[in-house]
Length: 87
Image (tube, rainbow, N blue to C red; front, side, top):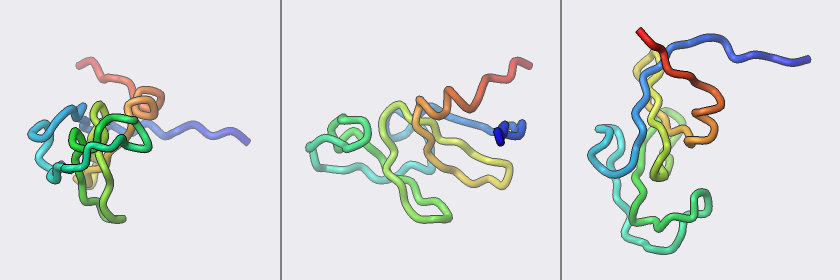
């Protein structure tokens, strides 16, 4: 059986560096590469969610759902799942 994601509007911000979104707080000092995006860890942020903390890679989107919860979504997954609303 196949499923389609229900249509839900969310707010999202593309995160590139600290200061792009208030929920992303921590800056890493390690320069070894990230296992997800291969960028240096000192370019990454940290976000607390209801299910624990998550590393935020440069270029990821911070999605704010209808309940006001923030969570990082990788650019590839975000662009497959969401499309802009032209008002």
